Length: 97
Image (cartoon, rainbow, N blue to C red; front, side):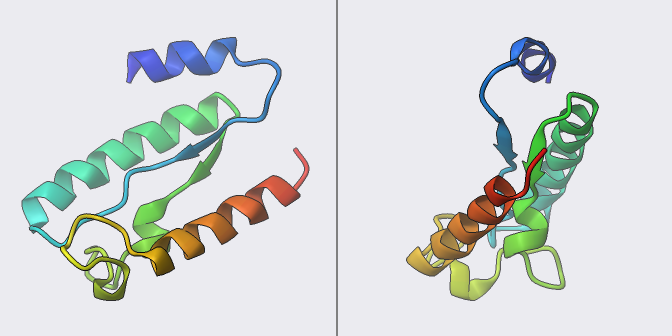
């Protein structure tokens, strides 16, 4: 976390988009850790004026797990999930800061 804050304070030129780690389908205990990590990174990014894509919201289902149609094995993203993520990145990039 401190490494991210240090890096974010030195970024002056290019636009930075932080893509948070997605949830999984391998268990709630793992997802609870990922939820905490996403929240901490999101808070640090907002304080550093860095754009954030929360893949938990973007790719998760109503229970907080990775949507089943976005992963064949519960961890790795499918082509469709990457398409959704790519579209979101494009949307963020198209908005001026």
